[in-house]
Image (cartoon, rainbow, N blue to C red):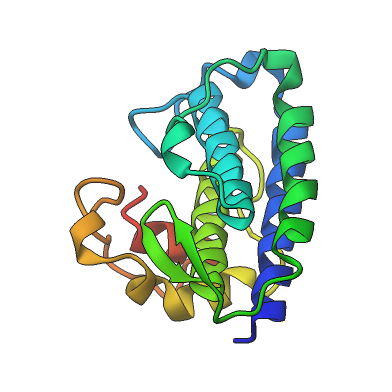
Length: 187
């Protein structure tokens, strides 16, 4: 996949998740999610943190300064905060070549590998949010399929048990987005 296509997939995933967050009612923030350690509010906080880390990777800001779950955004500002970050990420990466070396939260990688990792993470947690709030969990057309093609290689074994659970059994009857989530250990 080219860097330009990967950026388009990342933008599509960010836009999808932005819409999901905007459509999340205040009364849904306490609902459980497929990520057993998080309710909807904390899952959105993690998505915001992931977006901050994506922007930081593109702008050279250290990811260590961003909490894993952002909790200081008021509930009524969650959607606007995420939408603003989502709008800034693509332009921040626009001048990069796919082979440019960047510092992602998981180490020194190419810009293509960083954007691929953020796309996988955003798409997977988008599915989590959709499922938790009883909405369709299908990412934009083609995004999950392309994520599936590289997700097994993109998630290093050293992060299993820390950031990602062990993969669940694949089931080709499930949607590509759910299959991606299951590959990352999401129930």
